[in-house]
Amino acid sequence: MNIVRAERKVVFEQNVTEQPVSYSSRDKLKFIIPSLLGLFLFLVPIPYQGKWTIGVGVLAESLQAIFNPYLPLFMTTVLILSVVLSFVGRFMQPDWIVRSRFLDDLFNVSGFWITMRVLGSVFAIMTLNQLGPEFIWSDFTGGTVLNSLVPVLTTWFLFAGLLMPLLLDFGLMEYIGTVVRKIMRPLFKLPGRSSIDAMASWMGSGTVGVLITTKQYEEGYYSKREAAVIATNFSVASIAFSLVVISFIGLDHMFVPFYLTVVVSGLIAAVICPRIPPLSRKEETYYEPVGKQISEDVPDGVSRSQWAVDKAVGKASEVKSAKNVVVSGFQNVLDIWFGLIPLVMALGTIALVLAEFTPVFDYLAYPFVPILELMQLPEAKAAAPAMLVGFADMFLPAVVGKSIESELTRFVIAGISLTQLIYMSEVGILLLKSKIPLNLFELVVIFLQRTIITLPIIVVMAHLFFF
Image (tube, rainbow, N blue to C red; front, side, top):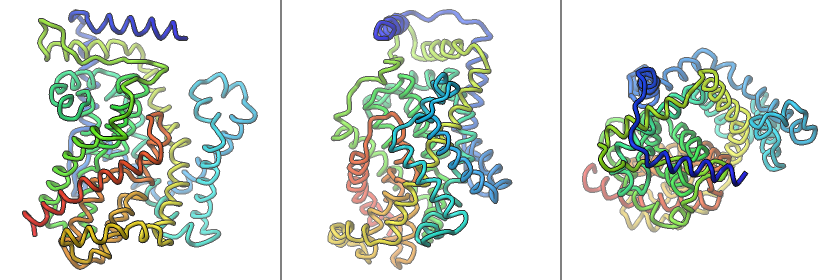
């Protein structure tokens, strides 16, 4: 195995230094057409039902509108099936699972993941039928996860998973990465292609950005440090979700200054966080089964634009069969439905129970009270829990802050909820399930770092420019 990896690395390093080669018109069209389609579906904002979203969002929301009454039952069935197949894969190990690397990875899982899948299916059954203790299935806990969050993830990831190869497999990442490397590398210490992850998050969904980052890491295009940095600093909340938050908290008339504040504070955090532990201590090595598969360096005597096109067309020319692309897309969807959604149901419900029915976050937030008072935020005691409750779910700070009278304080709460980025009901779980080297403790630390960095920036901008 090591010999094969070494041979692949040698071939890769040889390819990095070669001069541009001539590709056929067919190969060029293979880059241009799917990449333009992927660009439109994932990165181009379009108006839809009074808001801005992306093509994948239109497809997802249209499907959800049609099947929304049935999605909780459908996904509960999927969760139960994930438990059954996990027991089969773990303890019976039939040939049809063992012979498929994809199915073996998906269903032959450790006891922890089986436990999470069992817990997720139990919570789903309890919520669907309103069985057992109400704090499990109430509208604020299990009901929120199963009836609001899971349908959105189900439909978004259906289309994102199926269509993601248009972004990743046909050269768009190579083209953009080579072109913008001079900006991303010195400013954020990242390859240029990471701008695609950020844009997909910004225009569509932070979870889609994490999904793209995960796939790129597993295919050898990001190092461990780069993947960890991108996933925790560039999986930004979409414009659409930002509008929902600011409207919910009663400040929709201030959306433009609000979003400007979020962007400025988020960019500053994205510059600082990769330069301090734990992210700065992540290794610059690549996912071991594939090794390094990226180079954005431009050879001498070749223009950056020409090299970008050459790299992109070369990547597209490697796609030999539409069938393989379709199969890869369906595998993305199944991995999320059977692997991620049970975890969202289990940990998301637990996090919301802690936030809604226990004083845990109130106690943890006490140190923030004097800090908020020092920053001259009205109703600091009522606002303090909102600084931490976002770790459970990104929308919870807005719920906590909605009843606060001070517009200034509500503005700050809404801003901090969108710059913390790490929340366990969705992004945090996706990161823990992925092969990106981040553990729960590190996610807590990064969440606190982003809170500490962005809070004073948001407060200062709010005081100086808007209130």
